Length: 239
Image (cartoon, rainbow, N blue to C red; front, top):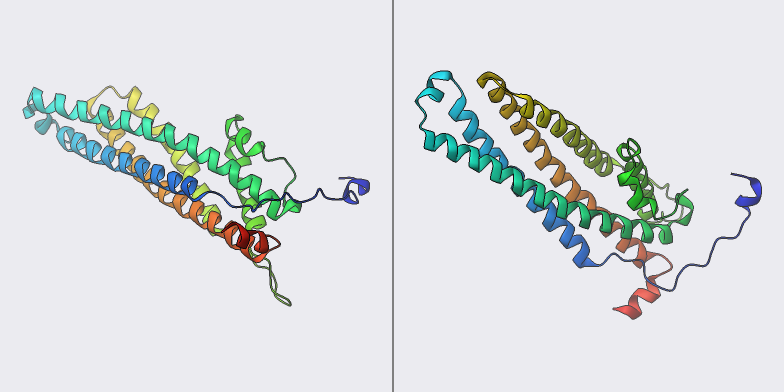
C-alpha cells in the first residue's frame, strides 16, 4: 500500500447501529443444530448398518427385510444430511456477510478487501480453504472491545481456530469417506467404509457445535462493542 493511500481520509461512519439481527444468529444456530441432529441420525443409521454386516456369519443370517430396512434408513439419513446442510450453508453465509459488513463499521482499518468477499470467498476453488478463515480472523479482531486506558488489547482466537479446524477437517474427511464408500465392493470394504463414515459424521457434529459457539460469540462481541463505542448514544435511542 502506498503512502498516499495511508493518508487518505476514512469515509464517514454510517448512521446506523452495527448490530446483527437476533433472528439471524438464532436461525444460524437452529440450522446448525439441525445439521448436528441429521449427523446424529446418520451415525445411528451407520452403526445399525455396521452391526448388521460386521462378520460374515451375522450378514449371512440377516433377513432380506433387515438388509433393505438398514439400507433405506442409511439413504434417508444421507438425504436428510444434504438438505439440512444446504439450508444451513445459505443462512450461514448470509450471517457471515452481515457480520463482515458490521465489522467493517466497528473496525474499518482491520480489512484489506470489501464485504463482498465474505460471500465470494466461499466459492473460489482452493481459496475457499483459507480466505473465509482470514476474513473471520479479521472480523474477530474488529469486533473485539476497545481496551481501557493503559490496558493492552488481547485477542484470543481459539473459537475461530477451533471452528475452522473442525470445519475443514470435517469437509475433507467427508469427501474422502464418501469416495471410499462409493468405491467399496466387498463386504469387508463396505464395513470399513461405513465405520469411517460414522467417524466423519461424528466429526461433523463437533464442527457444528464449534460453529454455533463461534457465531453466537462473534455476534455478542459486535453488539457489546457497539454499546461501548461511538454508537452507544444511537443504540440507546433505538431501544
